[in-house]
Image (cartoon, rainbow over all chains, first blue to last red):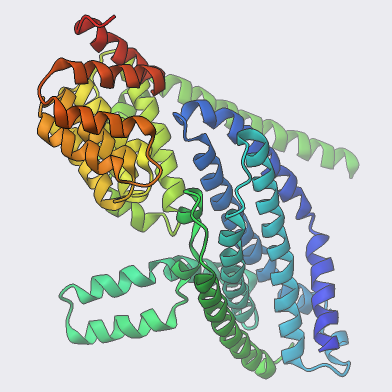
Length: 255
Length: 220
């Protein structure tokens, strides 16, 4: 475990070196401007609009950051040949990959939680009451990030950074379309197509599970039961993907 | 080497500047046409269902964008031709994307009923709002309001005011309105009372309408 934590800590340092903290500053500035500019235009709904935009913005930023930082993380290690030095030590390839996953997930999650903190502070200052419920939605987004990170780690274990980014974005998009795919197939499609759609549905990550932004914007708190379910689903799905990534990475030949 | 690099940098910078400036000029030249297109594009505003599929889980943020665009559309036309043909369509999209967003039901219905003289369409929007938010007293109250003021249907107004008065969080005046409507179906006193309430609590636009209506009824 200590070996995994060491790799995770190193990944965290590597990601922070990419000046991701700048994103926090830009996010905060954008929110302050939005709260001032949108309020008069929103006909009394400024608070809701700022919370909506803040949650959507933080979630999109964290997802993109995971995809673009994560897709080159493993590739850099291979390119600089640092991976040889690390794997020459008593550490298994799977442990190396799990460390990478945990480091990236922890960093982007911290960034997401910090953005939620900035959002809560801006809303409190601009509109009075603190929107505590945003942290429930962010908790769900953190679990969504675990799946996105796992998918990124999976593809980066055997493809190029560009393909990893492409497949990860495709997984995020299709993960949000999973329910619709199943629904459309159920509307009169042949039995074979329905069975195929059903199989694809259960294979794709159900990212809709992690979306409580609509509730939170209306001041409705996320129920602990839903948080628990999303946590369990996220942990299991991400765990499965990381195991698959480890299996592939173990067989990978370095040149 | 440095001189070559500087020259390369300057050429690149100049090219970038040229492209961006050209783009600005193209935009400037096309502005009259774009203004027209902006108007036309609302005609092709897709349905809320289609937009929902494309938002990838960010429906409420998309609803906010549509809401802000709808308010702008209303403002632009209020200052020009007083025609609001697309407002119902835009509010339909906003509420399909975010069915819990109460203000678009109320505002949309108000514009449809008061500005466009289409109270049935306004009531349709509010009814959809009540189905999505069955315990929101404001929507039930607005339905009562439109029944009384636009359709002069005191019985329906009384029904919805009473419904609103039984919902959690309602203001104290709702019960008064329910009692009044039930008791005195069919007089203008209720309309004056309702408009006075709007004058006291509504936003700037609603206050303007209330003032106009109260003047028409000889109440101010």
